[in-house]
Image 1 (cartoon, one colour):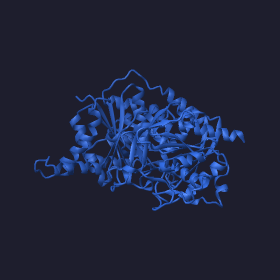
Image 2 (cartoon, helix red, strand yellow):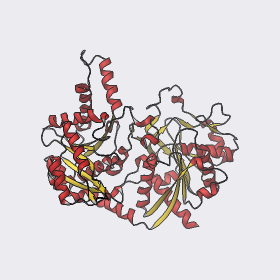
Image 3 (cartoon, helix red, strand yellow):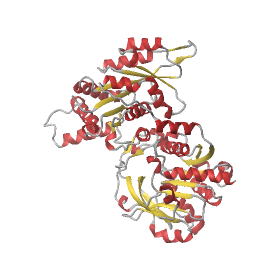
Length: 538
């Protein structure tokens, strides 16, 4: 009998039903019961990782401490569980095939014909069990990306079929997340799409143990009985998942529905500890009952798809709720900002953030935004490219380095205040080659960053190729922008501030990746508080 139990979460009928939120909510409930839980995501696309994907294609690329560029669902896992993920928590078809092909080239298959079954499926099964075999977890939840019936998902479904059989009874459970649509014309909920989805799973040899049914309407007992009968599960195994006010309500909804109890029963696990969700519900209560409001503008180039900045949006929720402040985020496209309309575009904002990004598109709008925030004493926060744009704006308009820019945008610059990192100059491959993962930073004691963190040495996650050009550091600091955070090993400038400004902090790293429900990021907390002070001072 295996020591670690496995839960598999599949999706049916349609995409975007929220497998990641259901997986994270179940994990939270099991964690509350005292179990050690982790979640992993298996994505069926052939990219090695989402690092080279356009945010419009796949939303945000979430970065882990160990430098893995991963699916944004890993952000949900960390935010819900307050447990760090790693490279092992996100696997793609591309990585699976690359590993198998590498083994074939080394002769590890002893001349055998390499096939999807058993070689690809064995690789998938091995990777599913890596975290379980570490001995660090009682339960490993595996979310399978895509929808049952997708051609690219078939090897994963087959791998789960084999693994559930190999693990034996009470060691694995399959949850199928599906949709129960409501037809207004007929005035009724329809179960047929779910029946077809489950039938498709069963044709592939995999029987769901539990159905979690998304719906906009209450699912009555007769519908649950019908689903149970035609989908070969017990009625108690049909769980309602009605649309929630926020994703943070879902753990409570799943607790009310008894999802954790059903899972534990099927895994033959006992727990005398009931989920209380005390700290979690304190957060939810504060989130829903704010005492103050601020409006913060986030200026970026991918604002049409808010999943592109998912961690930033969630970090504002965490920070605001911890202070009982409702943060209304105004998403503003940087390409639409110019000298003529900037006052109209940014009027009424309590704070301004310039978001991360890559490439030249929209950068001049970001620079105009930073100038506006600096000159009008509006609290400002820049992240990654936002920090680089802050340096460029200051170099141009305060230091007097006309045409200052980044070598990411233009070659042969007279004033390349942002330059390609030294260790990136010989890099030709795009995927997984940036400066990635957690790096240290030493903060000045008299800085706003130190005031926020209340510690000298911090560790934050990075994702960039370009850096502050230290050749211009003396000129820029003399003019009034200070480098207040430095990597002690490389000398890389990590944080810049303008001490004469009420709150102007820009960072090379991505603080949003480490913000969680129970541990809001201190820099976001301080920024939100500064934005409230700005409103109140008026």
